Length: 119
Image 1 (tube, helix red, strand yellow):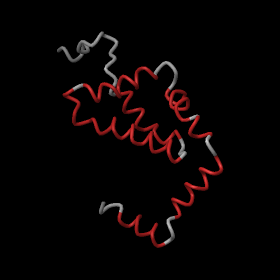
Image 2 (image 1 turned 180 degrees about the horizontal axis):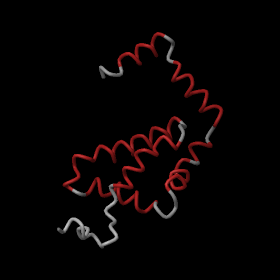
Image 3 (image 1 turned 45 degrees about the vertical axis):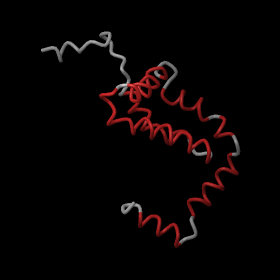
C-alpha cells in the first residue's frame, strides 16, 4: 500500500485519468476484447504449448511443495478475470503465462530427475 500511495495520490489529484482511459477504451473496443480474450491467450503462448501452461497452472494449485508459489496461479486467474471485466488487453497476462509454462510438471524424461541432477 505504501509503495502505491504516490500513484494513488496523483490519480486523485488529477481526477482519476486511468479510470477515464479504461472507460474510453472499453467504449472504443466494445465487446471485441472480451470475446477474443481466451483465444488470444491460446494464440499468445502457442496452440501446442497451451496444455503445458495449463498444467503448470493446475500444478501450482495441486502440489503441496509449491504452495509458496500459488500466488502466481491466483494472480493469473485474478488478472484474467479483471481484464475480461474491464475489457483490457489480453497480452497483459503474458508474463504470468511464461511463469506458468515454467511451472509445468512435464519433463522429457517422464517425471524422473534429469540425468544431470542424479549425480
